[in-house]
Amino acid sequence: MRGGLGRETKPLVQGHAAGSPSPNSMLRVLLSAQASAARLSGLLLFPPVQPFCLGSSKWGDRPPGGAPHAAPVQGLQRLLEQARSPGELLRWLGQNPTKVRAHHYPVALRRLGQLLGSQPRPPPVEQATLQDLSQLIIRHCPSFDVHTIHTCLHLAVLLGFPSDGPLVCALQRERRLRLPPKPPPPLQPVLRGGQRLEAALSCPHFLQHPQQRLIRSLAEARPEELTPHVMVLLAQHLARHRLREPRLLEAIAHFLVVQEGQLNSKVVQKLVLPFGRLNYFPLEQQFMPCLERILAREAGVAPLATVNILMSLCQLQCLPFRALHFVFSPGFISHISGTPHALIVRRYLSLLDTAVELELPGYRGPRLPQRLQVPIFPQPLITDRARCKYSHKDIVAEGLRQLLGEERYRQDLTVPPGYCTDFLLCVSSSGAVLPVRTQDPFLPYPPRSCPQGQAASQPTTQDAAQRVVLMLRERWHFCRDSRVLLGSRALRERHLGLLGYQLLPLPFEELESQRGLPQLKSYLRQKLQALGLRWGPEGG
Image 1 (cartoon, helix red, strand yellow):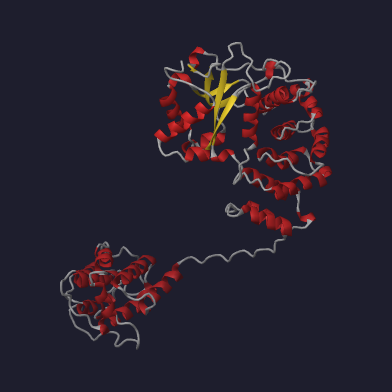
Image 2 (cartoon, one colour; image 1 turned 30 degrees about the vertical axis):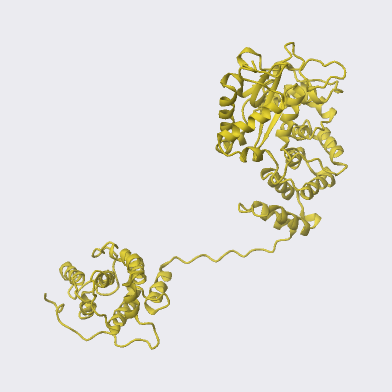
């Protein structure tokens, strides 16, 4: 090989820093049974570095005279890859700097690892040789590109060079210099109580201990800092996360009463939302009178907001007659018929009409015409569909199928006026579970008038067959960390009971405690027998 590649030269750097760890001893530790297999395997399997693939460097890119010569460079790489000792590696790198490129240093480090890991008795490595190789890389690493720096750093770590040693520190420093500078963080303004609350409610990670943070931020806020926007964010946060926190709900109710004159119905519907959803009626005595005044003032301005407010009050079982007169009036119904949200308003009005039928016997005002009534909840709610993989419905259905047979229950049946039931059974007066196909599974709606003193929940059908509804009470059907049903769930169970269906709740705690289908079948058998139900050959 010509061009000086074969001539021996004196090492470029002599000696090493006093007191520094011996690279020779560190590399020999890697060869022990505990360390070499894990770390050197990554080194030996590291893909070889191709010439000129790591970008150009500031030194030695072109030999004197102009155009680059690939042959000497490739020849040097072959010599490095075939070196028989660490000293020979250093000689090839140091004897002719004009032929060395940046990518030759990763090749040398990789070959060093192969020499130390591929032989039963590796050749001795002089400490000065390793120090010279380290100093040679440190001297030229400012000219490396990003990829070469990453490769050398990776190989140096695999070889056992100390993380606080000069080689690793120099490569890490050059890597940091190559990274794009981070923009300085924006100055955070000093936030007061209401602003801090708004910032917290707008943070997507605001999930850990939300009640305590909310209460603290609210307590530190001055009255003038609690704007409608802040309180709306608070109300939405409580409703979204099912947080039934009385102190915060009372604060919203008090704000609504104090700011009554400055609030329109579109803001009020958002402030009232958590009360209905969380099934919480506030202690604030002016809460209902305030809402009645707002509805009287704003009902004709925002029809959808008006109906939303009444929906929340319907869940709380406190519907103002005056507002019902207005939304059931022909003028209001005609006004909303041509709007984009006509269908959803008709569904809400159908639910309000059901509440009037079942819960307000003293109401004598207008009602929703039958031709405009639509099913209220004709299918499982969105939350149930979204969490179907966490639901117990499938395993309960299989338990009922094996226990009763497929013909003796119906799943997800929607009964008038539009409530979807989880499981429905038809039961004779003697307690026998009847085949559903032989019975009308629906109780009449509107329910037939009951004789004086008869409970509304008792059936009045001619066949005297009872309808039993098994109600799954999943974990998300309750307020968070509470045994209070959400308003929509409590409303459905209340109305089904008033319609004459006998309810059999199946709480999630009891369902989760059943280990496997045999235990679940035994649990369902006990539940049904506690109601006096019979099935099978002896049950008819």
